[in-house]
Image (cartoon, rainbow, N blue to C red):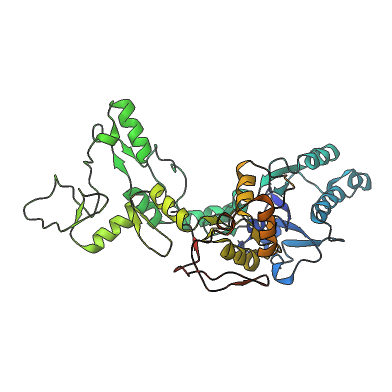
Length: 409
């Protein structure tokens, strides 16, 4: 029925940091499910609440025989060698792999390079490759899919019909970074167009301020940073345009030359042109850089269990509670100085221990290395005691919010 379509297989280790790779995937039909197969390898002592999604139509779970540290990795290798190794060819039971693509979801570069080389040596027709599960999404790999709606389709015709009916929105500016790329909705496209500006000398249209500034500097020999803004957008007027019958009342705190008739107009301008903080303060900032400086100062700690997790935290105690409750971590307490050094120096294969089961173990580790309480726990406020892993945190003053998501828009 669907001749020539690809069948995609994914293999991943559940104990790693790539769990989000298969989250929130929907299918339009049973035929769509049949073209996607995910093999998840996990230890046999994995808690029930930490198990992967249960759907035997497209997810196959492979439990390990032991609880050794690398049991899941070994199980993945054994499964692939059994399925696509030379023994399969000898038995005459090898499948037609001409339209089958195999992806190994990795946490670090070249993690499965040797395994892939051996499998291709055994089976030259096998289309197998490694993908970074921390940086890529499954919808970037599956061909007949929609990354906006997180849907997988049965065929290309169904995909094209969906895109035409739901996401047929494009920016027509050839200089746009998103030229010929779909926008998820008309609202997003209109917001994108509202941010467009023109060169005041040649009227060329730009969707990026950086491109416009570079154009003005190289084509017109003008420093854009010292040039006054002269273009107007919907909802506000520049001071050169205001007339005697136009009672301008409200100015933008970041753009004093832009004035508005109502607070609603000002709010629309603030949302479209400036950055609103997603922490408890709810303040606006002139630029994304200023917003990030503020946000990271309020919530300095990221989630160390999963790099794609958007939550940030004010102290190690709140971070540990998140690690335990959301990622089922057995060692939720991280030594902040050691973990930062590990990340900055790229010590992905380091054997140095940076996570611990409770704050007492973390303190013992910190004292042995000369860390002080502040740099280990970020204790610059008081709060009611938290009961994490059987340990009681010291009293601290509670902020309005203890965790927040970064506003990436």
